Image (cartoon, rainbow, N blue to C red):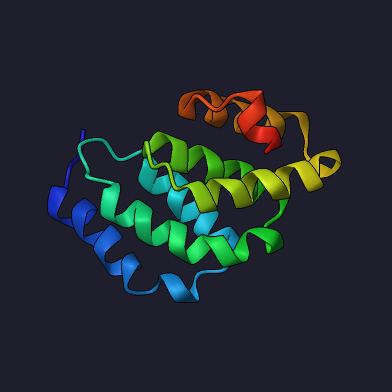
Length: 121
């Protein structure tokens, strides 16, 4: 239940103007927080988040990769280049991931209905 709908809908719009200044943790935290808003059209914001995050994936900590991947899947946003980058970085650094991070990424892949063949590609 949203107490102040104008405020909740204006926050993503304001953040979209500043996404270029968001670091990896900022992108992860913001995308997670916004993904929990019910009744908000995440499509345009998800596209902007994906564009901003794509070049920063390699500098994300494992927990931020997991959180960002989860948020994108809850948006039902499927961007092949972004997902390929997230998958590649996850596979490259999987030994750095905590069990919780691996579970979060696996859940996101299940939401996207990615197969093991798609993840290995």
